[in-house]
Structures are given as C-alpha cells and as structure tokens.
Length: 441
Image (cartoon, rainbow, N blue to C red; front, top):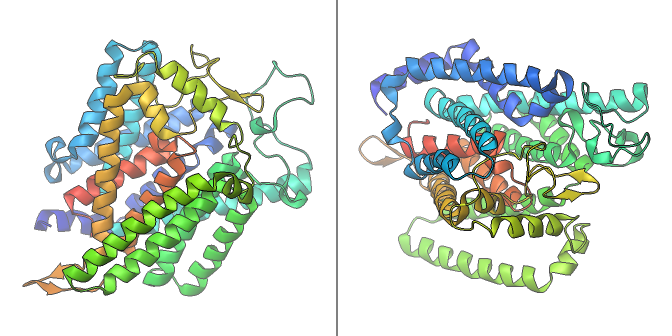
C-alpha cells in the first residue's frame, strides 16, 4: 500500500462523517424497501441519487488512488455488455433504466472499496445491521401490540384485488410476531430480513472474535441476530448457515496447515467431499426439501424458472437485454411470472436471470466475476499475512468478512436474484475491487 493511500485511509478513519455515510449506504442498499414503503419510490429515488452524488464526489477527490483500468476486467466486461445490450434489447427503456441503477450501485460499491479500510467497513456495516434489526423488531412489536392488523406499504393501493383478498406477500407487515409466523421487519420481506440477520450473525461474530466491539455488546447483538434468523425461518438461510459453518471450519483448519503437501491433501479431500455432497443432494432432494419445509416445486419457484427459461430461449446467446430488477409495468415482465397471486419481479435465481438478460455470454462473464472474487476472498482468509522482510504475521478475524459474505450471497443466488441488484451487486463490486487492489487493510 502506498504512503498516499495510507494517508487517505487514515483520514477516513478519523472522519465521523465518512463513517456515518458508509453506514447510510449499507442501510439504504440493505433496507431500501423501508424508504420505498414509507416515503414512496420518488422519495427513495431522491435519497439514492443524493448518496450516489456524494459517492462521485468522494471518488473524484481520491482519483489519484484508483483508475478504471485497474478494476477487475470481468466487472468492466459485464458492465460493458449490459450497456451494449441496449442495442438489441426487447425493452430499451427498461434496459436504459436498468443500466442507470446498475451504474449507481457499482459506484456505491466502488466508493466503499476505495475509501474505506476493512475495519471501517466492518464497523459501518455493524451499525447499519443493528439499525435494521432493531427497527425491524420494534416495528413488528408495534404492529402486533398497537396496530393489531396487517400493514400495507404507504402510498400504495391494490385496486386489482377485492377487499380482504390482498395476497400476504404484498403486506409490509403481516402482524405475525406474536402468532408464530414469519416476521418481515422494516424491509417487508421475511427472506430479505433473514438474509440481513444472517449478515448480522457474520459481522457480530467477527466483531466478537476481533474484540473490535465490547464482547458484552457484540454478544447481545449476536444473540438478537440469531433470534431474528429463527423468526424469519427461511430455508435458504438455513442452507447458507450450513455452508458458512463448513467454510469457517475449512478456513480454521487450513490456517493450521503450514506445508504445501498438507494443504494439497486438504484441498483434495474438500473436492471429494463436495462431489459426494452434490450427489447426496440430488439423490435425497425430496427428503432434504421436506426437512427444510419446502415442497418439491420450491414454493412455486420451479414455475417461475420454467417461464424464464421459455422466454430466454428465444435469444439464448446474448439475451433479451439487461434490465436488472424487472419493471412490473413493462412487457414482457408484466405477465412473465407470478406466484401466490403476486407478479414476480425477478427470476428467483441470479444465474437464470443473467442468462435471460445477457445470454450465455453474459452468464460466462458474470461467472468469471463471481468466481474470481470468491477465489481472492478465500486467499485473503487462508493465506498468512506477511510483514516486513517476509516475516509472517497473525491471522485476523476480519479477513473472514469478504469470504463469508460472498458464500452467503452465492447460496442466496440459487433462490433469489439479489446478487444482481442493490446490496448483492454492491457487495460483489466491493469485494471484487478491494481484493484486487489489495488496499483494504
């Protein structure tokens, strides 16, 4: 890391304003629905634009420490392909809007990677997650004790549904905290709240291990995050927790192995176990789904996937055009897929979504981006740092953060398309850029 970059990082460390801004960016990208449900899409748009503008200001001020040419090539190729898809898109207005939101999200991730150290990112993310969890539980408690009825988003009406027939998926809160149902929190979605709680488990556990926050305080929030995971009861999060536990165990074992032979044998064993696990999942899929509380159609997801595959097969090589999050009033997305009586706004699988929008070419580029980032975060977590004259340093708990977040995102990408939008894309860009630059301390 150059001296100028150290100075830049040091100034960020001493700036409460920059700390608060990072927390605000994390909060907005993780809980954007709270703005959309409360102050409308226009209000959310104004908040997002203001943050993007400030990100641009920060990037311009630090232009000496980064260059577009130094960014990961798969990231640049993916963005270029999305922009070029405007020329063959079947919904050019939607593609134009999707490109704008994608660029804005990439700018946010790039800013976090360039301006902040890993310790600062951990701290800011912890603040944002505490706010989301705390407000979510308070909101659900208020609905259950005071409102005592399901709550719809403000500024939204559903004239297409008769009174009393509005699908549960459309409610901000279903008033289920005291009834044993899945809570949705301020984000208005149990799956999304479950993922936020999963991130909180990762962040608070790392803070507990790193002593970056008092153990009593971090332990309290860690317990609250685990409780929230239980209250959302998401099958995807259950699978992600298992994947994270295996990842942490593998990292801790590898950190104890000092010879290349031992590490090679360990990697061979990991591959063998992975292959066996895949065959086991295929062979006992029905049993595993039943254990996770899911039907064989994965709660309607297979029907959505079939509709996406049928539409994407018309332009399989370059796709039908980038759109990011589906625009509900624009053909073909206004009638493409529905589940539980609700129009769907994504494919519930990031990889199918990329293929449908950018074809096999886009899928290959996106795969390179994700795998390259995963490999670098893995190396960051398992390779012992070197200090001065090749002297080995001590492993840090914070080096686990990028890897664990990436593993969680990849697991979620099999059932959701969040990896392509908002917090998913932001984290992907953040870790892709920061690990390649190797300037996050």
